[in-house]
Figure 1 (tube, helix red, strand yellow):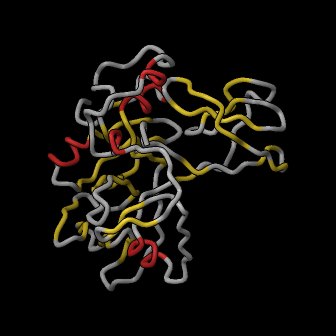
Figure 2: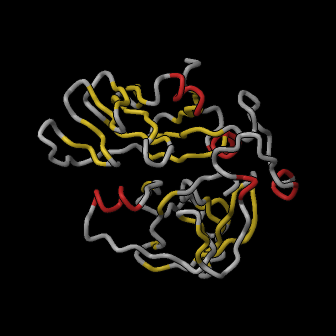
Amino acid sequence: MVCNSGTSLVPTVDGEMHHFKYVGLYDGLAVMQDGESKTLWNHITGEADYGPLVGRTLGPLSNLLYLDVNQALAIDPRMEIAISDRTYFAGGKSFGSAQGFDGSRWAPGNSNAPLPAAFVQTLGTEDTRRRRMDMGLGVWTSTTSRYYPMELVHRRGDAFVDQIGGRRVLIYIEPDTSVPAALFVNAKRASLRAGDVRLDDGTVVRKGVLRDRGGKALKIDRPQQIFTRWYGFSLTFPGCEIAGTH
């Protein structure tokens, strides 16, 4: 909720299942520890930071993307939906009974949210090129890490084509969730129209699904990405590029 970052990792090392829990903070980000070796792990890159398994990485690493129910069903109509007992709101009504962390002050859209003092105490040397709690899309490949500030994405019309790692990448705001995302494309230009992201090669992104001219769903290839706050991305990827400044 605070740094708004997360990735998908596979909890196995050398083919053996390991069991993880949250044990503290480092650089203002959550740190995981496995119960078997007591190694400390980075929850974004999956790398072992300290302990007997340093040099290992949990993987394969994949994206943890934001999507709503309509997008989920557009991707797979048979997809099951799990809802916890945590309190949530929908249609103006409150559901659930279990109380959890109140993250309203640190909601994704709030770039002026304060970072709790306990988090600040763990921060290393910060990158001051952007404000600490600035929101944006962090994208990285084996050769490049780049941060796309939300204000830049909005200024570019909420959809545009860039290049990263020698490949064209669509950077856009999902109309249904208002969350930025990225996917590799062959097109050169993009625009947001009537709730769809339209590309100049005839393809369209509709409810999170890439479709051809005839409406057939195409396989999506995405770079690794997180919708995150600046401090989290810049401390994880020191010296990262900032889109619009290079």
